[in-house]
Length: 265
Image 1: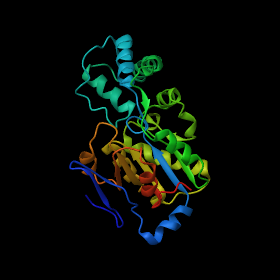
Image 2: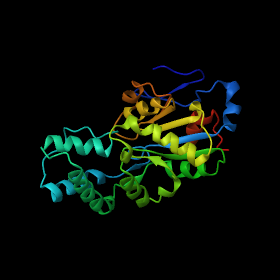
Image 3: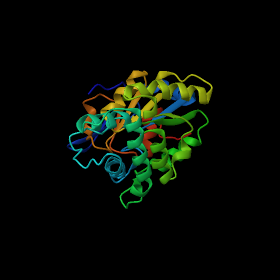
């Protein structure tokens, strides 16, 4: 894996390696603390685990809207957008790909989502709530969403856990079918919200799939991959993110990646 100057590798277990130092050369770390910073967060597998709530709600929408009960196991959901997923399902089950059918499917999914989220396995992932709270205390930091969820689905999932209000802007599946189409929207909205331009080296896309890494590169952002979703550290490392962590529980490691310092402010 390509490593920026300054990275150090910590061996926790033989098959679990992660980067814990900043990619910033030491001389640039103090300056980096002063620059406006943007964090763009994925949702599923990064901020929360839904206990398969999304899948249960989608199956309900397909069953009530189209009578579809077949297996979806051959469709790769991880890191995809809701629009892409619905299109693949329609192709598989020969459902006409029309706006009306898309809305029927999504309406059924969103109607079932709140009750599906009320399951004992839905949770905020370790360290996330504290990190989001700490980020709000930084005057030079903005954070938004970069997610394959439709905006209404993202709001339902994050509101269930009390996280929605952390994110005043974002990019969603409403903006495009493919993940790489979303990051320019997220960056533009971030700049509009903050009323300034973020330097590419101060934009971080944080997610748990290779698609998050790829869409970060579209806008020249740095990428932080976390192995809290369906991909292992080794699988994520093969896609050369700028930083890689097993999870977000170690706040000092997170801020070391972002700023070259474990300090939050």
